[in-house]
Structure formats: structure tokens, C-alpha cells
Image (cartoon, rainbow, N blue to C red):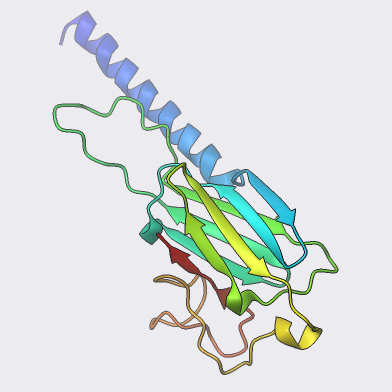
Length: 166
């Protein structure tokens, strides 16, 4: 092994470690989010760079909108990975105002071409519209963040699924 090969090997190892550290920082840092309100609904907008609809999970839980994204890194023919700096798992959370009464079952989520997830949650007419019955099956696009192997929440779990549209 020549000195040049040794330098390249050390450089590659450093790039990989820095890239992994950067990816971990992204994973633990909450995604940027905006919370907007009009007369009829709340609009929660998360940055979701590089996400596909099947990568996104959206949940409503106790006045909070949570998002989890598991992205896929494409293989590039003829290229070698030198710096894997993008985190493949991203998360974010947005608290709605403490006095917000919403109907999460009627919520919709849309992944835009510009890489944002827009979650619209209609306001409820009364406090009775804000909770789901304990035995009601509620699931997100393909997976839940808590629950049984069948992808259904455990009885009594306070999660609300939101469908992710293309």
C-alpha cells in the first residue's frame, strides 16, 4: 500500500464518519414546520426533501401533529458513495394552539412536488368531534408508529391516522 493509497483510505473513512454524524444530526433535529390557521382549518407544513408518498407517516396525537419520513437513497450507476450526509429518517412535530378543537379524522396530507408535506386539519364544531372511539381502527398510509403487528393501534391508543395523498 502506497502513501497515496493510505491517504485516500483515511480520507474515505473520515468522509463516511462525518457523513454518518451529519445524518444522525438530521434525524434528531425536528423538521422545519409552519402552522397556519384560517376560519375552518389548521394547515401544518413540514419540509420533506426527497420523500415519496410511501415514505411519509403522519399522526395526530393529543393536540400535536407528528411526521416520520423514511427516505431511500438511490443507487447511482458508476458512482461511489463518498459522503453519506443525508439522514434517511426524518421526524418533526408541531403543536396546535392549546385551545384548538379539530376533527383529525377529516384531515388530509399532501406531498408536494417542491418537497413539502401539507397537512390540513379541519376545525371541529364541538369538543365531541375531537376524539375517536376506543375500538375504532385508525391507520395511516401503510404503517402506524405504535400498535400491533397488523398495523392497527392498540385498544385505547390515542392516535389518529391521516392519509397521505400523491
